[in-house]
Image (tube, rainbow, N blue to C red; front, side, top):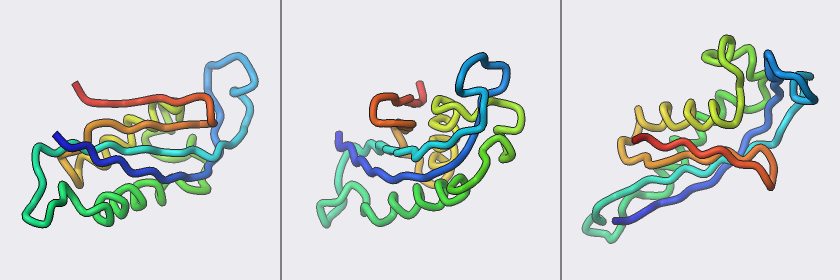
Length: 119
């Protein structure tokens, strides 16, 4: 098995509903995102997938989040835009473009990360 990992980032504001604490107030993060893809083999050129292809797919997903107020975007108008929910959202969007997605990690700061992977 081969794992292909790519990283990117986006900046956005959010607040947590039904939460008591600092995060209930409007605030922002510079989120870092790592997407992991899994392949059984490589092609005739020795590539599992071209990095350019998966980077572009992730970039398109993150462009929809970048410099936004996440609470105003679907599906976050009803569910909190937590790192956990962002990881699942990004995973599901990438899955549409590439069935080899294995997991998505969303870091809201250098010490806190949420990971989503399908069963």
